[in-house]
Structures are given as C-alpha cells and as structure tokens.
Image 1 (tube, rainbow, N blue to C red):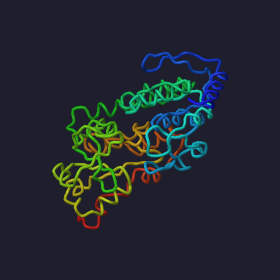
Image 2: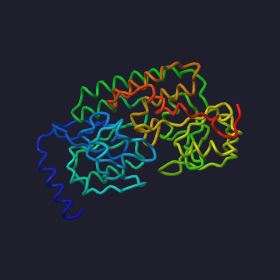
Image 3: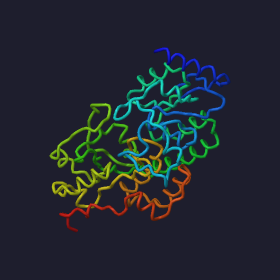
Image 4: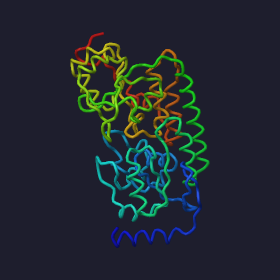
Length: 350
C-alpha cells in the first residue's frame, strides 16, 4: 500500500469517530458509523440493494448505469443514480476497481455479497481500506427478506427495511407454496449471441428460474467465474425443452431468425420468453432484488394453468414500492415484452 493510500485511510478513520458495533450475517462484530450517509456495494447485487433502500446514499456504480443487461432510464431511476461515477468492480468485464479512488469517495459503509464466487478476494482487498464492511447473503431467494432488513438496518433505514422485507416475504412464500407439489417445467436458459451459451442447473444465475417451478435441462458443474457454458445445437435438440427463457433482445432475435430453432418444441408451442430488464434484469446479471417480481413472472410462464397471478397488478405494486415509480398498463406490457411471441419468426406457421 503506497503513501497516498495510507494517508487516505488515516483521514477516513479520523473523521469517523462516532460509531456503533453490529453483528453481520456471520455473527462477526462490525463497527459502523452511527450515521450512514454514503454506501458502496462491491458488486451489482449489493449496489442495487442499496438503491432499493435509499438511492441517495449510493456513491458509485460497478458498471455503467445502462448496459446490455438492463434498461436503466430516467423514467424509472433517479437522476442521482444515473449520474453516479463508475468506481469499478472486482469481477472484470469493465473497469477494475481502484481502492484509492474508492477511499476518496469516503464511504461510511461497504456491502459485500457473501455468495460472490470471488468473495474472499473482495474481502481481502477491501480490508486494506479499513472501511467498515458488512457481508450479506443474497443468492437464495428465501434469503432476500432477511438480507433486505439487515442491510436497511445497517444503512439506518429500519422502517424502509421492514416494509420491503415484509413485502418480499409475502411474495416469496406465495410462490414457494404455489409450486410445491407441481411437476417442474423443463426450461433452457438461452444466452450469448447465438443462444447456445447457458448456465448449469446449480448456478446462482438460474436461482430464480428453479425457485419458480422450473427445471434446468442442462446439468453440469460451472467451469468458469462468469458461467455462460457453451453447448451445441445438437445437444439442445436432445434436450428439447418445454420453455426457453432468453436473456437478451439480441439473443432473442438471433434464435427467432435461425430456422434450425423451429424444430424445438418450445418454438412450436410459442413458449419462448424474453427476460424483462427494465430498469434492472428481473432474473439474472445481476441476481438482484428484482427477482422478487421475476419469480412471479416465471411462475406464471412455467405453470400458467395451476398458478393464477394478476401480473399487471403485481408489477405495478412492486415498481411503486421498490422503485418509487407508478407505471401504466401500457408500460407493463412494454416492460414484459408482451408484444413478442415466437410466432413472429418468419418461417414458423400457426
């Protein structure tokens, strides 16, 4: 650590004299300021969690506010969020984080995602800054309500935390009970430019899909940090999934215009669905609080006869509570890609 970093750390410690001790989710004591005004998330799941609790306390982003995995626009997000600097990430794929730059922002607290595949590296790096850090589990859907409440308490927003946590608990419990005893729907998760990148069945990238009553057709052990396991089309033909969930608009257009895909059952039956990404992805990349509404959307796809959900109502309620925006039925239709169907493929007939 160079001289400048030493001085920045010293300054940070000096101005944060009044503090309290809290237990993190590992029951380890962490000293945090009594008043938390500036917070940073070491990964997108944590940064987006901060946004849901209080966007005004965010000091920076991991990646550009708007990127290929979301539709972060001014209609749904605060001007402050959209103007935040990109401080970087520990995960590659963009700007690498610079600890000196992070310290200059003088965060009162950093949230670290416990389920991060590189969490050990992240914790070791952040420890050098002496900035108070709390580690929060956020992979499993059922962990989210407690994680929301805990993070909100740490940020000094217990009332907000209780409201969001109670809502999340109600929705998650409803989906859990609704899919219990139902035969899982076999799905394929299409990613990559050609739709032939996907995720292993145990990956956190498909946590929401599995929770909502789906069964991943691709069984494997994740081979790399980013996932995106490659398969060939012959393998996909043998899988012949009942439903295809598509990660991006580009991938959707790619597979819908590829005549080979018309041989798949999901294409023939009109069961290809593009993941909503406004303002953040509902399912994955990152697996954020948006999964609370994402599992309702997925459950309705996987089990439309058995599970009855008033999706427009649920979506509008969720957006009002978590994002602070009121949306119309027309906006709901646009967000959920309701106008997109596999039958738009030029070579497919009814």
